Length: 175
Image (cartoon, rainbow, N blue to C red):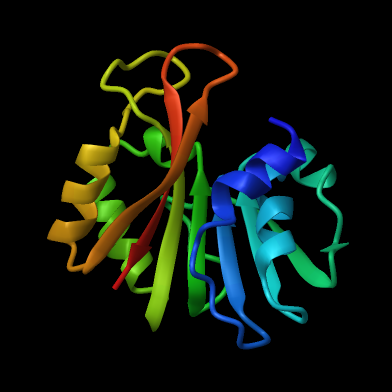
């Protein structure tokens, strides 16, 4: 996905303007959405980019648009996350790799500040395959986060997938 398309998917999100926000990008891959988020955060914020692939992390710069990017090799499902509290968590094409999504959302909540929120980019499909083993339609995402105690699950937008299998959607989840 091109950078401007990734930014466009996240741009409608309500991200506070207070400086020094701390965000996690879990399962960040080579950083397409990490850099998109960096374009939207207030200056002097930090993104903690976490992925199991050290090779993918190497393609992400340490700073983008005056936003520091701290890279961590790790499994966001089983490992401790790279900071104790976040203003937000971004997961772009990553939650569909989590088998026990309920348990993971419960874990992620313990890392969110009381006013913290979540940004999700996912395929709107029920059809599992080797690249999307645990699919998460927008309806299922809404059920998952509402059951976890979040008050709002809003679709920010959608666009066709480059793979043509299903639409990609972006959502913001607010406590």
